[in-house]
Amino acid sequence: MRHFLLLFLAPVVLLGWARASQPVSVLAKAPDWSDLAPFQKTITRADFLRLLDTVYAPGGAWKECIEVGSEAARIHQPGERGTDFRLEFAKSADAAAPVPRYWTPPGARKSVPGKPLAGYTIALDPGHLGGSWAKMEERWFQIGDTAPVMEGEMVWLTAQHLAERLTALGAQVVQVRKGSEPVTGERPRSLRREAKAELAREGIEHPREHYDGPNDPLKSQTVQWQSELLFYRISEIRARAQRINQKIQPDLVICLHCNAEEWGDPAHPQLTDKNHLHLLVNGNYHPGELALADIRHEMLLKLLSRSARVELPLSSRVAVSLARATGLPPYEYHSGKARTTESPYVWTRNLLASRLYRCPVVYCEPYVMNSQAVFDRVQLGDYPGTQTIEGVERKSLYREYADAVAEGVANYFAEKEK
Image 1 (cartoon, helix red, strand yellow):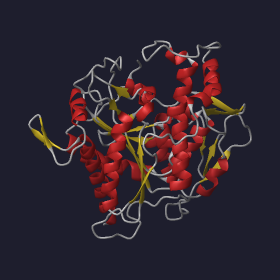
Image 2 (cartoon, rainbow, N blue to C red):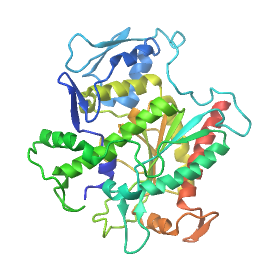
Image 3 (cartoon, helix red, strand yellow):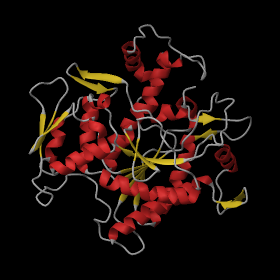
Image 4 (spheres, rainbow, N blue to C red):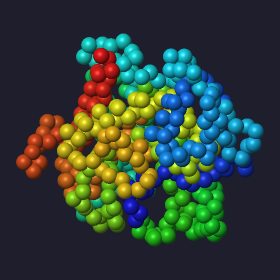
């Protein structure tokens, strides 16, 4: 089995082709560059460069696709000469035009005593699916006849508690998915053609149709595995993004996940003593990712909408609450795929969900699912009040998670009211 972290966090590198001139990531459409037109003169040159260099494309990753002049930036469109997009800068911050966006920043609405989230819409995005899909997603394991551990179910239950907390604080809360029902209308069988195309691109011209169980070392070379991957990891997230951006249009999305370490055979999983916490903010794009037209386009929409102004400090505030509630240390990446921020708990990384959602996103990754401590707490289930766990009174894992996130969000919004 592949390392769990790499499987669900690795950036999408599968390629598709909207047309020969514009290479795009799999299941993506060629971008409409006119989407950037409303952002003319909304950002200064200094702020544009600062966001590129410190959040979105550090180390000069942007220089192959963006030319920054004194008055404007020229955005290259892959393969289309003479059609570069020209983004004009504001002459000063005071002269900048209003930023067009469907979301309202914290502190911009009229405050209501005791309800710091009043007037704001918050979408809850419990990661993955769970239920009958959990084994396909490789978010499932079981030891003997104990309760199975399923990330999709864990975060769904957390989302129900979190919705109650946020509603009490004045927010209008919308769940992005309903139970374990997929948002996308696609299914693995409807994505077989795209799966075969991806395998052919990798040089596998005559792939096997099916893999031989979860431990098949060559399962990634089968049509079944590729089509399943496209279903739950690409199509599902794109469908959620469409629902968020076109229907819900919230002021904030909270993505709920749990982490994991390598567990080997899910029928005989390995438990670990490791247990940690981190949050992810969209950013740290690499040159290979920005070579794809859709990713370049989406990065610029995130940058120009100023999502980072909310995502970075809000994620740091939630991290404080989660760290205090869980007692977990920060997770540390040891590759260039993520970049640390001022908070040891918060990292920038290019993930599909946080990139596609066109509003601020808090992306939570607490608890290691296959740690002995978390496994034991999952077996206790959900319960009101507290239970004594290793001499400490603890809420259920799901209520602890929800309470900490709600506290961090509420504290940040309350601070912005001042």
